[in-house]
Amino acid sequence: MNDGNATGRVIQDLRRLATGAEPGTRLPSVRELTARHQASPVTVAEAIRRLVGEGLVETRSGRGTFVAARQPERRTPDLSWQTVALGPRRAGEEEMQALLALPPAGAIPLSGGYLDADLQPAAALGAALARAARQPATWHRGPVEGRADLRDWFAREAGTGLRDDDLVICPGGQAALSSALRALAAPGDTLLVESPTYLGALAAGHAAGLRVVPVPADADGIRPDQLAAAFARTGARLFYCQPLYANPTGATLAAHRRAEVAAIVRDAGAFLIEDDYARDLVIDGDAPPPLAAGDPDGHVVYLRSLTKSAAPGLRVAAIGARGPAGARLRSARLLDDFFVAGPLQQAALEFVTSPAWGRHRRTLRAALRSRRDALLAALSRHLPDLVPPAVPRGGLHLWVRLPDHTDDVTVTAAAATAGVIVFPGRPWYAAEPPAPHLRLTYAAAPPELMDEAVRRLSRAVAPARQAADRG
Image 1 (cartoon, rainbow, N blue to C red):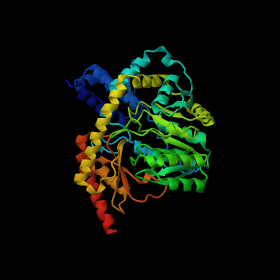
Image 2 (cartoon, rainbow, N blue to C red):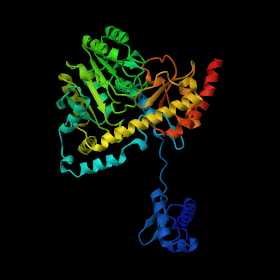
Image 3 (spheres, rainbow, N blue to C red):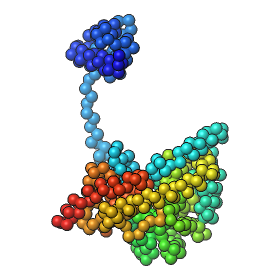
Image 4 (tube, rainbow, N blue to C red):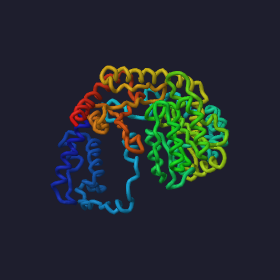
């Protein structure tokens, strides 16, 4: 006897009887239902239990099963008042939700900002977490700024001259950035950003009530002449940038610009928030040191996270600044959530101080190169005009320019219909984009799927290209 089918038959029979009877009507007994459906008493009891959970029937001890009282229809709630109470929507919030949405089943993801599960060191992280959990001190309350030994690791790794006392452990880079913007600026202040720049920085800036002003960047990173002009025009005291493998463009601030950018920030009496998210995502050659390494006077606020290079679940980052700025960062983090959970901090420390961390970085470097090159090769075969002129030497993304007058949002929707998930370029700009782009992530899909992914993308680009030509 198939108990699953029998349960379904009993449920269907009881539902038919209950919906056609008045509340309080007695329904067939367990014995009757057992005989009628050739089911076991356990199966009948399970069917009754499910219908009780639905509120359709009720059991009375020693008396049997009865039709439950009808529940009054729930009034459709009127939530329209919230439109007035909440006011206008903050820019970037819906785009962030779209960016973090999980891809539908069967689609090839080229849109995420994290490593594919195959690239994550799950076994090593699990072992690190297990070791952490066995240490009683892991569960104690630690310093609100985070474990000293973990802060010391971040300080030594960065080679910036920051001390462990200058750093605060945060639950991921986004949390660190949001805290920094609130700590170092007041609503109404100006935040300068590269154009384009990380979508999460735009959203955090708007959430903090800041006036976000874009500064043009090119293949060599932020343009110093435009940055100096922006400081002079706006009086800004805060500049956010990703000097290494910037998201979404993949650009690295050129060596001949580094000193000039630092001098411009210093002369403006401003802070530069250096988001060093990609320090462990090097593919070709060696990465230059952080800008913070050449900053003796505390103009650079340094941020580094383990989330992008290890796993989305390892939400551990550090942010650091010297002087009163560091004190304000510590206060902002304390008000947000007191401190990062001890087991997560200890697990992160166990992982990055074990041989598994070095092995993971070496394996990841080769895997990202394989995926990046596979995506570039697929673009060369199927969409050669989308191959970017400069290949990023690290990071997770390609920034591809669509034909002029193409609507990147339309292409993104068509690509999803074709079974490949990409992300449009428009949300990465604080102002009007100069040209349509797509961000393609090569870390989220294996190399063997890149050709099919670009085939699907080409089917989405073709009609948009034709529409642009007709227009």
